[in-house]
Structures are given as C-alpha cells and as structure tokens.
Length: 185
Image 1: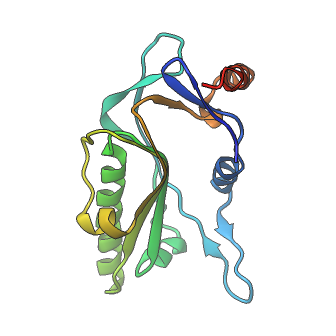
Image 2 (image 1 turned 135 degrees about the vertical axis):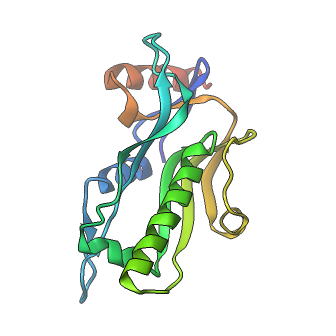
C-alpha cells in the first residue's frame, strides 16, 4: 500500500502496487489459463474531462463522453464476452457519466452480437473503482449492479485525484506527494 496525500484540493498518490499492476495489465491482451485457452482482455477507453487551460493537472467534467478505444467486433474475442461475468474497472467514480455510458453501450453491443450469433446466455456486468467520490452523481447505474456488483476500494470526498499515470511531470508529482506526506496532510 502506498501513501495517499492531499496537496491543495488534489489527492496525490505515490506509486502504489495495486494501481501499478492495474495500469500494467492494460497493456496485456490476454491472461494465461493453465491447461486451457488463454483468456482475452478487452479494453475500452472513454474520456469525459476537459483541460481547464491553467497548466494545472485538474480538469473539469465535459458534456459528452468520447470513445477513445472500443471493442474489436471483428475479433474472435468478442464471443468470449457473451454469457460471461464482465468486470468494468475505472480509477474513479466521479460523476458516474462514463460508467453509465460504458454499461449501456456494452450491454447494447453484447446483445447485438448475441443475436447475430444466435446465442442467448446472460452476460453480467460488475464494476470496480479505486475511488468513489462521495457526492451526487449525474449518471445512473442499474440497481442490480449498484446493489450487488459495484465495489469501490475507497470512498473519498469530492477532490481532484491525481494519479501517477496521468501526470505530465512525474517528478513534480512525486515531489508534491512526498512534501504533502511529510506535512501529514
């Protein structure tokens, strides 16, 4: 476990083992399964935040979710999503807008592919976030997900979270995190 520190109105993180592992996993395209077929990892990338133009890493929620990366339906791997338990992982549940978009679009796409392939197995979506901001959300999620398949590692107040992998100057990020932890903030 690493150190969570506050600098101004931002939470800063020093490299934390679990966060680094999640980030590194995003570069893999499959997991090895002993005595069986490899399990593919499908990744999507969504963006909602806009740069404030202040030179500060803090951004503001935008008005539209932008797809940066989506599933490859020409791949055989899409069939592996049908009838499975799918985990959507996000670093922060802030406005819940991107999580709502992800669930709705993935449900729609899996349903479309199921019908196309003549399959009827139920696909379940679950959500894991590193941080859930304790505030009113703009987006909504189905009750079945919120009540039994939503997990947040931590609930935080509504402050800007600065993750190491988003820093434009990692040395400055580390310096600010170290200084804030010495102040016991």
